[in-house]
Length: 91
Image (cartoon, rainbow, N blue to C red; front, side, top):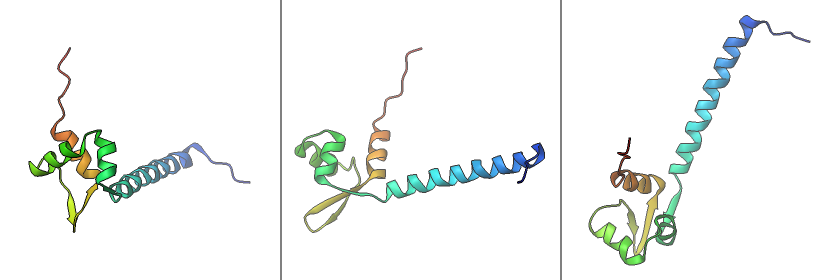
């Protein structure tokens, strides 16, 4: 049996905090790697096919196209939403 003293606890807690942050970053990175198709984008943005096409035509949202199939990354949606974000102005 090993008893931890207070002086041993701080480095241990710091290591746990660092590991927790690394796991968060890995989770976010893996979410960015997810690829969505056009049908997914329609559901995520809650817009019509025509509106989504309009966003692409106007260069408002980034996308990839292979043949006739359109693909998006999670970061494409975040970037699009951030560009069109209106900050709160009420006090």
